[in-house]
Image (tube, rainbow, N blue to C red; front, top):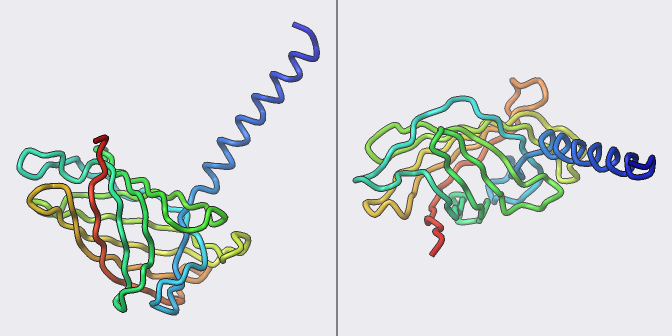
Length: 186
């Protein structure tokens, strides 16, 4: 191999590794203005899995595992998020938030089944301001959802508690309802 080809290959490998690590380090979802329950987007999260749970089914169906389109609504009806969510059989979850890409709109969580068709999802996130450059502090996000009898829709509640950098001072919070529809290959 010539020196030029080796240099090009090395540069390509380094660029690929940099992209993987920068994407991993910045993987997050947009947060919400927790001081105003109108659901206005202001920042982003890095979500980390805290607990794993087994996959389960509803009446022989796939249970929560699969791809979903989920809408998060504040109590006043304002849209907080419109996301695509993938619940995995190993108890982890990946969400592509409908928020602006500058906030790193991908995030992760973990879930466990708590009843026949009921599931609890937990995200512990790092929130950033709307520029994506100033760390606000961690956010604790909880969801409890229940599948309908068809296994193709779920509804439930969510709550977000935003903490300051000290991880103790509560800056605000928002809660509301979730409704989701299963997305399929058909």
